[in-house]
Length: 278
Ligand SMILES: NC(=O)c1ccc[n+]([C@@H]2O[C@H](COP(=O)([O-])OP(=O)(O)OC[C@H]3O[C@@H](n4cnc5c(N)ncnc54)[C@H](O)[C@@H]3O)[C@@H](O)[C@H]2O)c1
Image 1 (cartoon, protein in one colour):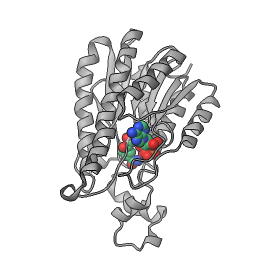
Image 2 (spheres, helix red, strand yellow; image 1 turned 90 degrees about the horizontal axis):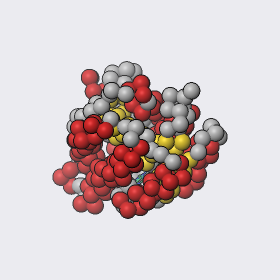
Image 3 (cartoon, protein in one colour; image 1 turned 90 degrees about the vertical axis):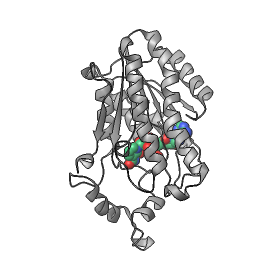
Image 4 (cartoon, protein in one colour; image 1 turned 45 degrees about the horizontal axis):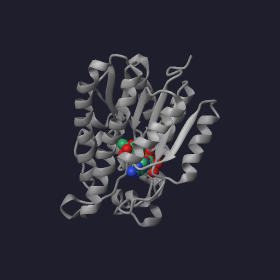
């Protein structure tokens, strides 16, 4: 028996990175998957977002594990589209037990000069999109009458400030407020709500030229390569490693999703190599 055998998980931002990893990890433990991703660019984001081919690859990897997956291109900013994708998925797969609100974007600017649209895009995707995900899912969890587990992806910087991504920091702190309120509102129905707080994760969100230029303005562009950046990134964490892998976050999501965490709600769970205690 898998640790989430027979359950159905709804995952946003599932085309690549952590979202794909969550889909595969949960599928390996017996869950079927309802996946959504934007699969388009957001103009203010200075690195490429996922493509339809990426989402197709997630489908392939979940199906290779013998699990079912229902995948749709949808934008977490568009509540109607997101709800329709989830409603269709639940109609196809029969139930909903687990929610991973994982979709997110980032961009870089000091707050005093941040363009309005750059601020708004991050708030819309990383905070409002998370609320939309929970809002669309709650009626299905409730209808199942079996409780459920909602896991909101925040960040280590949802629990502390850092420079140059103030909109992201604000949105991720906001997710903690959402999580705590939802945990209280849904507790009577045994629906648990927790947040995960990764520091750096080895995905395109940090492995891109815009992030490298921000982190190493002193280096010539040719020297801003993954290995050099990893050396610099190590100093952020207490453990001497530059970043965690997507599966490390997936393992935390899996635990929160599973019955092993059946009485865990309202928790902010770091997956941060000790960044927050440093
Ligand atoms: N990589 C890190 O260092 C790190 C650290 C802490 C938290 N996070 C958070 O983890 C989550 C996953 O990020 P990742 O590291 O896998 O990066 P990623 O860029 O690989 O994945 C994010 C996914 O979200 C999708 N997406 C973006 N906007 C969307 C929208 N409006 N609607 C639907 N899907 C959308 C993207 O297409 C992409 O597939 C994000 O919420 C991110 O903010 C990342």
